[in-house]
Amino acid sequence: MNKIAIYPGTFDPVTNGHIDLVQRTLKIFDEVIVAVAVSQKKKPLFTVEERISLIDESIRELKGAKSGIFSSLLVDYANSVKSIAIIRGLRVVSDFEYEFQMALMNRRLDANIETVFMMPSEEHTFLSSTLVKEVASFGGAVNGLVPEVVDKALREKFRKK
Image 1 (cartoon, rainbow, N blue to C red):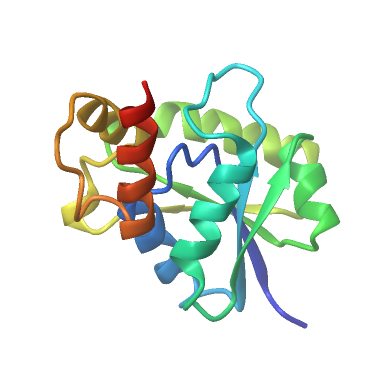
Image 2 (tube, one colour):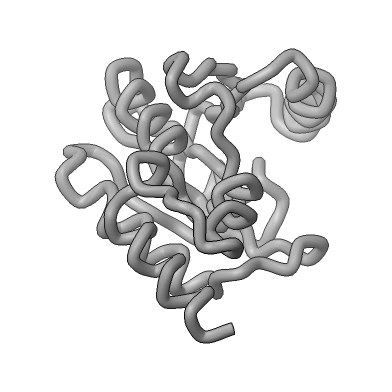
């Protein structure tokens, strides 16, 4: 039986920090699903379909990695794909409080699904999708921070505005 983990988020857009966590998750689990949340609160720059396409292109060479979409409770989605773990990235100490609360709530909803906290590599610690979008919106270079396909998509998106 494959050990499956899900790595949920909005991924608007996916960054090299996200890809780093996917690669490192695959050292522990047989399969990781990069699960894109259909966010009701956030107003994403990219549509869900665009985000999935960017993720698929970015992880296509990572054996065991694939994408998915969810708009339900995370534990319900996890059960639907037979995941045993939820991967959460912690960049800075301030991430921990929110992530800890979410992990405890998810455990209350389903004690059979573990939350695994992972830190990104040092070069990605400062990186966030929000920061990448802000830099790109002003014409700043984000190459090296995001996969090439995302860099191109950001330039096209902000050229249209």
